[in-house]
Length: 255
Image (tube, rainbow, N blue to C red; front, side, top):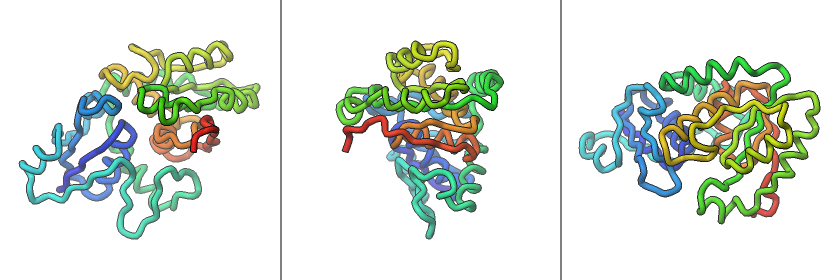
């Protein structure tokens, strides 16, 4: 039995949780809600059905389980003598680690609403469908000031234009950016309608809809992804770590 103190946004937390699941089946989960303006405003149980005992903060969890070891991170935790697999995909990931991570990811059971939507929309994919995973960093003021100001949508368009016979499953963190993509390829876009808007991390509906895109994105054979995006990385993992990924530098001015 261990404590998993999952830090950061959705994908950061999931990387930490999956790492802890590789360590121990019995997890006490620290999953804060609405503690930061740019993190996550949704509980774990509103996304997944796994029966982890869930705590709002680490102090409360440690008070209840003072003898348990705490694992806290915002990324995959390096276990024993393993290499660091963060932002690593494809053949670069050792096969034993890949199989171990995917095994634990497959144990995560989405809530019924998410599960049903994934099952419906994956039927729309075919061999010509390419996932386009766009991370603009325009979803929050802090992200915009550090990364979003450098976003260049033409870098995404340049790559999509190469695939003249394909349709595109588009995931995005910014409503206006999605609109631009849709207007450019109106007859070739597959997307999951949002109950709120693209990039909403401040409502249960918005985050559930993001998880739907997370689970769907890795099911196609190719992902055109945004370099540095943990969302794109985790789409690949949740798809079974099988897709080819072409990362685009969509923020060319960023250092």
